Image 1 (cartoon, rainbow, N blue to C red):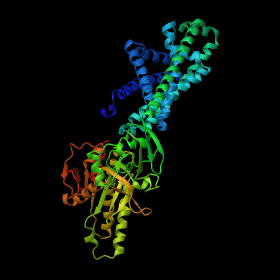
Image 2 (image 1 turned 180 degrees about the vertical axis):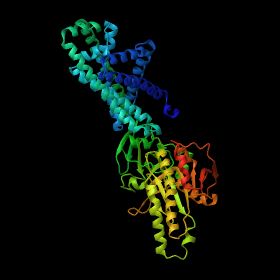
Image 3 (image 1 turned 90 degrees about the vertical axis):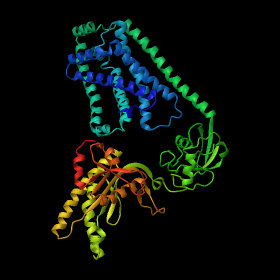
Image 4 (image 1 turned 135 degrees about the horizontal axis):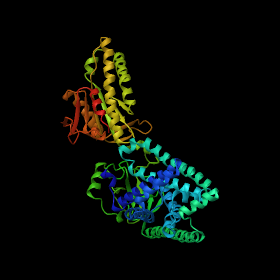
Length: 557
């Protein structure tokens, strides 16, 4: 949970204030929805809510959260260097800007009317005031906008957590049901109030009970609405002015970058060359995401190298590792302060190198190595046809256990295979790999029973499962390059599989897989292994039979 609160104080404050507002909005919408059942239940729920919201502490927290959340959002918008952003972020910002303009009349004719003119701003008063008018449509639209804005904020804050991903189907259903419930309650109560107002006696009684504002009170509230609307537009205009002014100042302190066989762009000083490329929509490969590890963002500086500081030790190490030519730099490490002409060594558009898909992508996934024990000795003297026939029967029995759990066979290695589990995140990948191990064990037992019935010796296997950073891409000559995976994780998984023979077990599962799958490793009897070609020791769970993993999978992630 602590990871969700990482960030600077402004980020944490924005999240905290957003949660306060979301709690208020959720209870308010549920309150409105109770109009589906009865006016009395709707009113009693509001009375209970207002014990908190109309108290001094509750009011201070609520309105402070509103001002802080809106203020931080506007400040963040004014301080942006560019309006280029993902579509979801643009939608969320647009909804956030519309909310104050639609919310202002609601606040004035309820809370302000209550404070200034002693109006009982009960649901019956508010719904009677707007039902059957254009304002009813605007307030219904406000309900949907506020709910969508809040749900988007929650989703993009919590989407990386495993429990949120598991609960997504339920949460999506609730996100539709809550506004639907509120609008149905509003419509039902609106019809009841409209009928009451149509009767002169009931109308007079309702107006007396709620202390309905007279014409002078309505005129006063309208003046407040006009004044505050002007203030809101002035604030939005100020935000726009600050953004444009910063843009102008940044442009005056910007640098010109010319890409060989590409565009020329103007970018503010400060960001790295890779960040400048991304901000201006210039294709620039970086498999590691700009961490200085893969060197695929490297460029040859054809002009302007004198304005750059010399590479630091980390950049030098990376450039030496790939035998980079003189004048080559890493775009993720240099921060241009003067005009540059650069040539991108790798181009995602394929004009000077491979296409992006062939250069690969970096992911953190679980992989599985499987090998048949003693297969060479078993098949010595057999005809090649018989060997191939046995292998194909074995793979026909085993591979569905992999594909059925979301994995795929990356390559067949004679009497073994390498499988990768490409899923939405590493938790799902790890659990898919563990399920595959269990099903492989069950499939092997069935296959061996069939061999026994045929009078043939049983097969034994070794399985190694590991999780870590992988590069997935096409490897080979252009046009003849099959997709494959490479990286230290592949080597470690291969060594784990080889160690099953030495340890005397069927399966070795690394602790990285168990931890990613949400399985507590402290109670488990893990072995510590020195794997050839792997820098650090690997702790792993040794299983005499693959089917033994079923007990672990019973524990929720």
